[in-house]
Length: 365
Ligand SMILES: *Cc1c(COP(=O)(O)O)cnc(C)c1O
Image 1 (cartoon, protein in one colour):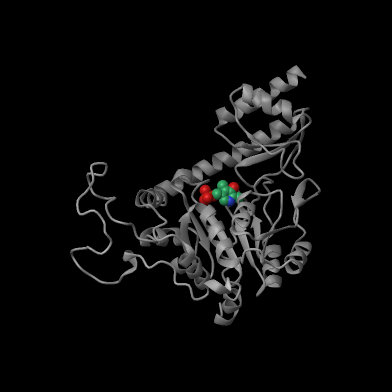
Image 2: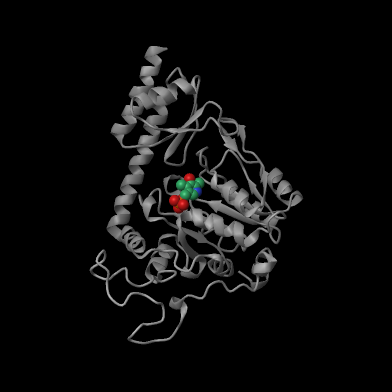
């Protein structure tokens, strides 16, 4: 990527932060020594941590984990920032690029709520280009979205692919086309929290030459590590550096980094692929069984680990599921989803419980 094209992206950074260096932690000092007395850490291990592993502050960006994640995602460490879940990356992007009260954040609802939450917290204007139902699925009008982003001065365009809660993946060529149209004006953020479950490839490889695309990945879903809070932003090195300057000094707790690294060992990755295959099989089975139910209006095609389902009587379906001890996500407050529930794919037994509870709805109806 040329320095010039990346410069057009860096110009999008908040002006007041352009020469901001962030916090200089003791860990970022380059001095070498045997006796480390520069960070006010405890000299002896505490009783909760007899081995003393947790006594010292962790590396701000643990090198081995960064390298392993870069390898997993087919990129290089310089293009990758580790954060506390991709949630933190969303927050950092909004804070680094949006001036409160001036810049906009474009979202395509119905979509994951964190983009709007972070925009609100930063005082960034929310601009909406809603997804529209087209055929049997939701689709984004990329031309309308670009027009709106330009007209309403959006600095960030958040796309979710596969989409939460709609489940479909966005066409890669359209995303790249959108980014090219917005180059120098806005950053296109592609949240790929569910891409491991999709037929489509990640955009990481295709976006390597695009200075204004940021891809978000996470270990929370396919890698079964939601509580470890490890997510990544992948972008041009200069963008990654800018985000890092806005981030907390030690964002990656050492025990979490260790578990994440274990999840990226070859055997663990093979087990992850097996679990993902099971989710994909169960997704087809559950979708087919649900589609046959009289009470089900529509099951949207899904590239993720959940199904979005419209019901003739969503209230009754939700209550019957609850009565059977099954908690699903009520989507009815979301725009365009007044009759919809989002059901995460569980184990085969759990999915059977979903079907049994909903068949009880049918029997009672
Ligand atoms: C679950 C989810 C995330 C959150 O990921 P973390 O890495 O756990 O913060 C991000 N984006 C979408 C669309 C999600 O559904």
